[in-house]
Image (cartoon, rainbow, N blue to C red):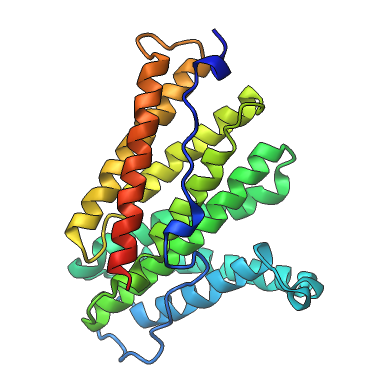
Length: 274
C-alpha cells in the first residue's frame, strides 16, 4: 500500500492563531543591574540578543535595504556565530547558580543546534536538507531569545512575562506548520520523510519549551509534543513499510487529535499573551 493512500490528511496549523510575532525577540535586559553571580548573565543576555538578531537579519531579510546589504549582513552573522561559539566555551567554566542551571542547560542545547544548522547550511544542496536547516535556524533563534530572557529574569529576580517568554514556543510552532504543510498529496516520499524527521526534532524542542510561567500552558505543550512525536514516528514507519498495526484510521485519529491540541494551545497563548 502506498504511503499517500495510507497517510492521514495533514493537519493545517493556521499561521494566524498565535499572537506573538515569530520575529519578535525578547527585549534586551541591558538596563538590569549587574548580577553578582559568577555566571555573567547580563553579558550573556545582551550578547545573545545582538547575535541572534544579526543571524535573523541575514537569513530572513525582507526589506530592499536589507537585501542590498547581504554581504555585510553575512559577515555580521558569521561574527555572531563566532560569538555564540565562544560564549558556549566560556559558559562551561562558569559557576552556574542553581536557580539558573536549567535555563543555562536549555540555552546550551538550543545554541548547539543553531550553530550546527548554520554551519551545515552552506554545505547542503538537497532542497529538503536546506529547508530543514533554515527551519532550525528560525526556531532556535527564537528559542535562544526566550532562553536568555529567562536567564535575565532569573539573575535579576524579575517576574517573567508570558508574552515575552512565549516567542520561543511561537517560533517552534511556526516551524511545525511549515513542515506539516510539506506533506502534500504530490510530495515525494523523501520530502514527507524529511518533514516528519523535522517534526520529531521540533516536537522535542517544544517539549523542552515547557518552562514558562504558566503551568497549565506548559502541560499543553508537553501533550502536543508527545502527540506530534507519535504521529511522525508512525508516519516514518509507514514510509519504511513497517506499519504493523498502524492503520489509516489510527493516523486520521492522530491528525484530529493534533488539530484539537494545537487549537487549544493557540487559544491559551492568545489569552495569556494579552
